Length: 184
Image (cartoon, rainbow, N blue to C red; front, side):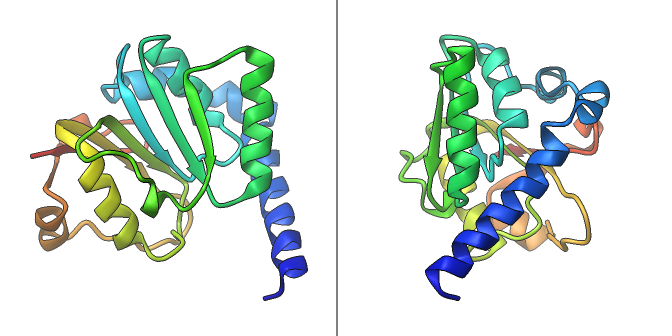
């Protein structure tokens, strides 16, 4: 795919996601700050958000962690990152870093993250396993990983993969379509 076609694909993809995530209808049914807090996100946490898109959950996470916390929001789509940065500037939110990069190569320090979440990312650039290797590497022991899939994306958390990623599923904590895991 040439650069022009890739740019067009990013633009179309972003606008489709933006229509869904920035529309009033979704905001009536889902309150990201409440959802994430119910999953264990708290004030002062450092958060890893691969595939942040237009920032629907990024803004909610930033509200929960407050000024003492920080959100590391990543996306490979330049339109998503530019849009999220404009939203952050408008809301004067300075506890979010919106980065244009593949989250599987985040360059975050080992075990520096308290809470990581992925929502609606059916396909990860470079593969889901590589992204999960990065989540596992960056998540502190006892840290929380929340995952919610949309669509037909087959993303497996087999016992072997959970062992590889040093995660345990905590089914009694699953909420709002998210599966909840803890780093061991």
